[in-house]
Image (tube, rainbow, N blue to C red; front, side, top):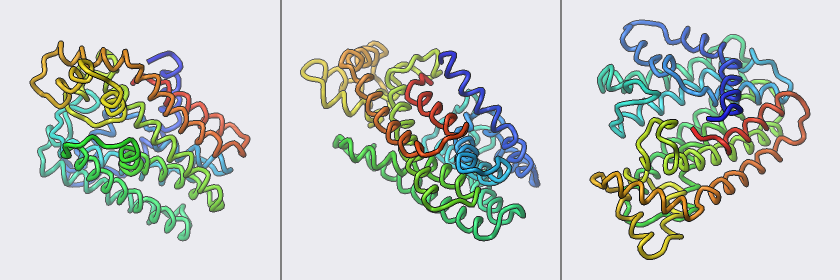
Length: 332
C-alpha cells in the first residue's frame, strides 16, 4: 500500500467515524452475545468504503452529511451481513486478521447475527425520525433490490465455481454486477436520495457506483492472483489454488498456450498443488501481462464513473474522483 493509498484510507476512516458511533449505538442490546456477534466485524476493521460513498453522494448533490448517516449505517450493516454469511458458506476462519463471527461465536449465533444486521438496517432507514416518509420508502426500495441482487450474484458465483466450463468475460461481469457492484450502486443512490434530490441525480450516481463496483472487484480479483502476501496476508496465488474463476485467471487461461497453459491448469483448483507449482502459475500470469490488461479494463469502468459525475463542481466530486484513482491503483 503506497502513501497515497494510506492517505485515502485514512480520509475514509476520518469521514466515517460518526458512522461507526451510530452503528455501534444501534447494535447494543440483549441477549448480549447476539449483539456482540453482530458488531464484532464492525469493531475489527473494514474500509468503510460503502458508507463513505453514501456520505459523498449526499454531499455532491447539496445534502448535509447528517442527512446520510442512517443510510450510510444501513448499507454498512448489510455489507457486514453479507460478510458473516459468506464466511459461513465458505467455511472461512479468518477475516480482517481475526476469527470469523461463526468461528468465534458458533454457526447458529453467526447466522442469527447476520440476520440481525439485515433487519436492523431496514429498521434504521424506515423508522428514523430525521427521514421524511417518502425518502424512507425510496431508501427501503433501493436497499431491498440490492439485497436481492447480492443473493442472485452469490448463486451465480456458486454455479460458476461448480461448472466445469470456463465462463466468458460477460458472464463474469454479470455476476460481479450483482454480487459486488449492487451494494456500491445502492450506496450512491441512497446518498443522493437522502439529500432528497432528483431522479436524474440518483441515476448519475448509480452509474458511478455501478462502474466503481465493477472496477473494485476486478482489481480485488487481480490482487487475489498476483498480490504480495506480505500486504494481502493471504498465501501467494491464493485464488489460483482455490480455483476461483476470476477475470485475471479467465484471461490467463484464454491467453496462455502449451506448457504455460498446462502450468496454470495444474495449479488451478488443486488444493494439493505444491507451492512451487502455484508460484510458477503466478509467474506465467505475470509474464502474460495480465495485470496490465486487467487494470486497463478497470480504468475503462472508472472513466465511465468519472464522466457520470462530471456535471458537479464541489469538493465531494473531487473526493469521489480521488476514490476512483485509489481503487484502480491499489494493492490491497
